Structures are given as structure tokens and as C-alpha cells.
Image 1: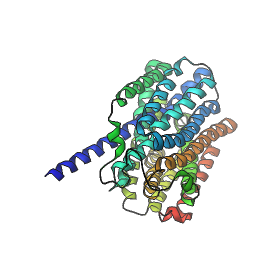
Image 2: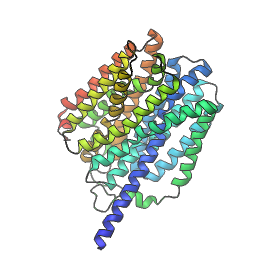
Image 3: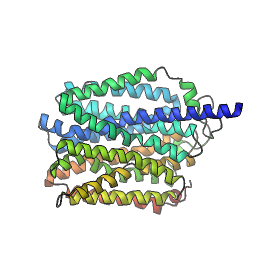
Image 4: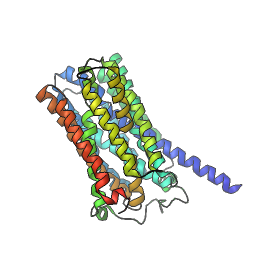
Length: 411
């Protein structure tokens, strides 16, 4: 009876940690991804061209990538409490002052730099590391739920941001977002971090005195093909996905939808994004991961082609195909990669290695977002952007097959 009691208690604690990581990832990344909804209001208010506004998001994604490396290093050295306190503090500052700005460099500094660094400190890097300490069986499923917070955040923040913009304007909307982060900062400061950072009793990734032991360091991981395979999968896939996601609301308006309809469609894709990540994690625990990844890339191609065809025929069928394909596949490779990394690189350098590979995602997302905006300004349309996204999405899929260490889950 006593053993059953402790098992239930441990399981409940694991679920609480998972819920916490899901919540923080959702809100922090959801605020950043809701920039797609703010793109048109900012462009109209300041008379900035599309590429200039998109460059704010590009800087955000670069700093999110660079911050991922810093987040992993700080997590391994100082623990999760440091990450979450610093990250929420940065996010509170970043969003609190945006409504007072009038120059684009101010948006670069606060939304781009501080927002990106803050989101990386409380996002998927500490979440992946904490969840892997609390779950062993069905690790892929648990990691996919934590990772799916990015999709859940879009679901919550995109429609709410659009409604807030319509009622209060973009300036007050950003200030309200900052209030959420201030409230979270106060809440997080009272959590029992010693218990949270330790992990479950029988987990092989459980820490000793709050520090992970064994495994390989970041320096050692960089010397493996596996590390660079993960890095470039993140990079190439991000070019394809974020070249679409940032511009999709503006594009749907471009082909005839209203702003509310476009934002709602983006939000529905966010619902499926959450579902897709969870389903991917479940599948990755049961089937070969490179096959699961290939299916998700197929859905991404369906989404890109459907979006492109809407220029010729704005049928609801193509919109639905886009929502399904993009919603179920965007971010779906993340849970597969994080599960593989938790198994291959478990130990003292896991968070740092997570962060370093996520730098590839930041670079790719920034490149995809700004290139799609530049090509729109240059050509007056999105066709070349669709071609660019298709090519890099294919390259990301190919790496799952051509690198044996990833295909067969070996260092």
C-alpha cells in the first residue's frame, strides 16, 4: 500500500511538472508567434513595408535561437529557477514598453532581442530538460505534450490578440501581454524548485544534488554527426515552416479573406498544431521515427501547395487542406528530435545540447521569415516564397533518411 501511495504521488508530481512546462511554453511562444497578427497593424500604423516589419520577427527568431544556447548552458549550470526568473523578467520588460515606441530599432531591441531571449529562457529548452527528468516510460509522448505548448500558444494568443487589437489597439494589447508575464514571474518565485529540479526517483536522468551527471558534454556532442544532423534538420525545416507561418495571416487577407477570418484560420491551425505534436509523440514511441517524420513532412507539402493554389481558386477546400496540413505538421518534428536527443545525449550536457541544436531553428526561422517578406516586396506576390519553403522543407525531410545516426537512433 505504501509503495502504491508513493507511486501515485510521484505520478501526480510528474504531471504537475509537465503541466507547468506546457503552460510556460504556451504563453511565452504564443506571445511571440502572435506577431503574425500584429504584422498588418504595425505595417499600417507606421507605413513600414512588409520586409521591414518581418525583420522584427527575424531578429526575434535569431535571438530565440541564440538564447536557446544560452538557456541550455544556464540550465545546466544554474538550474531551472534561474532560467524561469530571468526569462519572465525579460518578457515583462519586452512587451511592457512596445506600445510607447515609434522607431523600428526600438522594436528590434525590445521585441526582437529581449523578447527572443526571454522566450528561450522559459521555452522548450528548460521544458525538455525538466520533463526528461520526470518521465522515462513514454518519454516521447510526454516531450511531445511539452513541445506542443508552442502550438497551443498560437491557438490561445493569436485569436485573443486579434480581438484585443480590434477593441483596444495594438499598443494596449502588448501591454496586457506584459501583465500576464509579471503575474507569472510572481507565481514562479514561490515554487519548490529544489524538488522540481531533482526529477522522479527511478528516472535515469534524475539529478544528483540538483545537477545532471554522466553523458556527453556539449563540446563532445559537437564532434558527432548526430548533433549536426539535428542542427540542420531544425534549420532547414524552420526556413520552410516560418517562411509560411509569419506571413500566412497577411497572405490570406491578400487572397480575399477578412482579417478576422484569417486570424481565426491561423488559430484553428494552432489547435491542430497542438494535436499534431501530441500524435507525433505517440507515434514516435511506437514506430520508426524517420517514417513518422516523413509523414509529417508530407503534410507540410500539402499545406504549402494548398496555400499556393488559393491564388487561383480561393475555394474553402484549399483553405481546409492548408489548415489540416500545416496544423498537424508545423513543429511536429520537434518532439521526434527531442526524444532522440534525450535518449542519445542524456546526462550533464543535455540542456546545452538541446539549446545548441535549437540555434539552427532560430537561424532558419529568421531566414525564412525575412526572405519570404523580401520576395513579396520584390515580386508583389508569394510564389517565389512558396518555392523557397518547399525546397528547404524537402532538405529537412531528406536528412532523416541520409544520416544513419538519426535514422537508427545511434551516436
